[in-house]
Every structure is written in C-alpha cells, then in structure tokens.
Image (cartoon, rainbow, N blue to C red; front, side):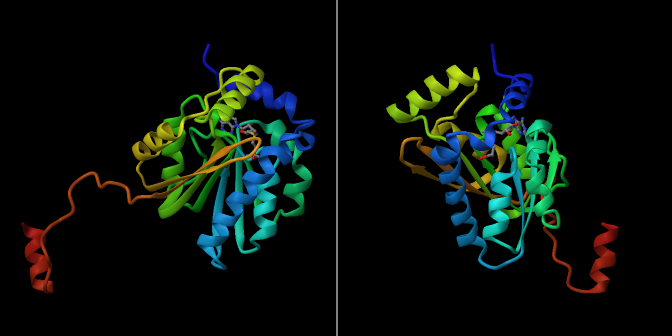
Length: 238
Ligand SMILES: C[S@@+](CC[C@H](N)C(=O)[O-])C[C@H]1O[C@@H](n2cnc3c(N)ncnc32)[C@H](O)[C@@H]1O
C-alpha cells in the first residue's frame, strides 16, 4: 500500500511528544540544518530575506535559521498540527519573525512568488505526490529564488540500507528519491541550475539546490517595438 497523508499524520502525531529528544536530532537533523544554514548564509549575506520551511515539524530548524540569520523572516508549514503545537515555546519566543502555519506541501497556503528561499529538510520522502510538492515550492518562490531540499541519500549501499530498509521498515512505504529522480522532479517543476551535494556520515544525506525560473508565459511575448506615443496608438489599433 502506498504511503499516504493519514499515515504521516498518525506517525507524527505519535512521534511529536518525543521528537525533539530523538537520536536523529544529532545524527541527521542537526547536521542537515547546519548545511542548509551555511548555504543560505553564503547566498544571501546580510540581505533581508523571507524563507519558507516546508515540513517544519516542531520548528527546530526555523528557529535555528532565525538565530543564525537575524535578518531572516521565516514561515514554517507542516501538515501535522501536533508537531507545530509541540514547538509552541519556539514559535512564541520568536513570534515577531518566525510564523507557523498548518498546511500541506502539495497545496502550500501562500501566494505565488512570496519567498526568497524555500527549504525542506528530512520531510520530502513523506510526500505521496512529490512532483506536485516540488511544483508548489517553485510557485511560491520569487523568480530567481532558491530551493534547498535535503533528504536521505539512498544511492550508495549504506544509505540504501538505512533509508530503504530501516526507515521504510519503521515509517511504512515512504519514498526516498534517488539523486537522478530528484533532478527529474526539479526539472519538471521548472527549476534551473539544479546542483546536488552528498554529505557522507552515519546518516548520509543529499542536498538539492535549484533556482526558480521565470514562469513560462501562456502566450509568446509581443515582438513589436514602440518608438513614440503615435506608434502606441497605431499598435493599439492593429
Ligand atoms: C522528519 S520530520 C522533519 C522536521 C524538520 N524539517 C526537521 O528537519 O527537523 C518530517 C516532517 O514532515 C511533515 N510532513 C509530512 N508530510 C507532510 C506534508 N504532506 N506536508 C507538510 N508537512 C508534512 C511531518 O509532519 C513532520 O513534521
């Protein structure tokens, strides 16, 4: 049976209570967060930026971004309200700059072109429709905005064993995409300049980085050139 959102809601509803104390915090989540923050810092410098973190859980990463990059305004979206509620103390402490929203990665409750960065850490393998989620991430990014997406790296034998055997055994039929499949998904969603980096270690992970392209116009752009107000009138009559 394919993994679905009901399973995700039940799994994270149960896990929310002990989630922040999980061994995965230092084995996988912490290192992946540090890697994302390094990239955002390198790209954005001191510029004010707006970030959407998809699958934000209890807000550990969202609050780390804000602590490391005080010029950032961060929105976190998660399907499971129990996870958001568990992080209430974090959202409260940073209430002026970090905002939790309950919602689904496949239908992000944000306007198009709203964000400079979209991040997604350790969550993508839970999405039953990964192409739709990637397309939503593209939609909410400004043209030229950047996606940083981290998930378990399952292409080498050790990663395959951890993610496709152990994690799948524990979490059900989740799907860790291969590096090739990630490129396909991101290309189809309209991203450009897709780059990938493997982080080795006891829990290897893959960082996918890509730029949101300008949306393709529905009709070809006009090809005439207007030189004077007279020619504007003429063009309007044509
Ligand atoms: C392993 S946790 C990762 C949390 C956080 N990103 C981190 O790195 O600590 C995965 C999160 O994805 C969320 N999630 C699962 N399916 C989702 C969906 N369809 N839309 C949004 N969030 C989802 C879960 O509720 C959970 O909080």
